[in-house]
Length: 54
Image (cartoon, rainbow, N blue to C red; front, side):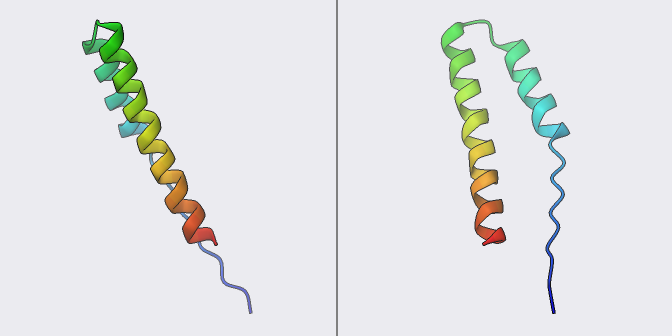
């Protein structure tokens, strides 16, 4: 008996929001902060998915 768990993540809103933030920010420091926040969010999602998978 095998159980499978399928998780579908719709990241289009995340990436469109990130693109809007990147377009709105002109300072390179703010741009780096926005990219760091995006990477942190994506790594949190991946960590949660890996914990569920285990």
